[in-house]
Length: 65
Image (cartoon, rainbow, N blue to C red; front, side, top):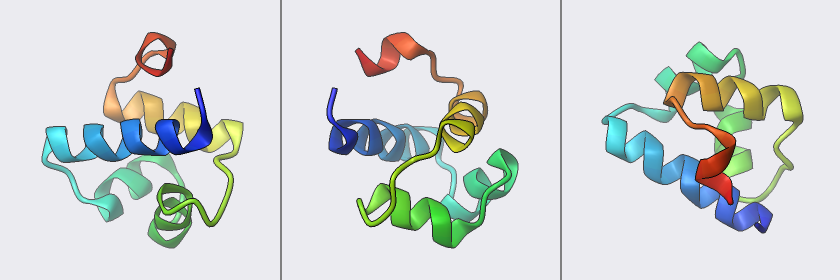
């Protein structure tokens, strides 16, 4: 799976859950600006941020295969 697909999956899940980028970022322990940069492909998604986002958005590795 490409990084764009990962970002798109996360973005879709945020929308599905009816959450804001700010709320997701805060719950995942990252800044809203960093999350926005990750979702807009300006910054890579570090493993720690990825794990936090998966936890907040109730995603599992299977969602990314």
